Length: 171
Image (cartoon, rainbow, N blue to C red):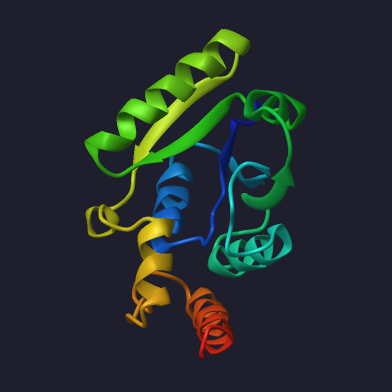
């Protein structure tokens, strides 16, 4: 029997987008199992709590077999988490050239920490190249329709967050 090839796909996923879903779909052609892991970063201000992001990810990835796609949460170094899960790769999505510079630096640091964990970069499908969590949040904050960029539940939760936020800031 061939060894299982498992990858960890870490990120803040605040919120998960269809670009993230596209990367998971493509990765399933390469890996037997993908662990989509919400990374806790105390220095990053997020719109959604960790529990909310886990819920949104589970919903966004519900079409994939649970035996092949798992959603989890971790704190600390990605390579330590990957090792603890028996993963041999850290998966990262790329959209545009500007992503590569930052991702390359992370990959080199991860390689410095653990030579046995490989960094694998996959492109999202071309229709998602412009989509990022930050852009989706900003568009939703100003009332733009983001329904075609995220799952229905994510769109609903974004609207609820910003409706509540807008009402609390009215004078």
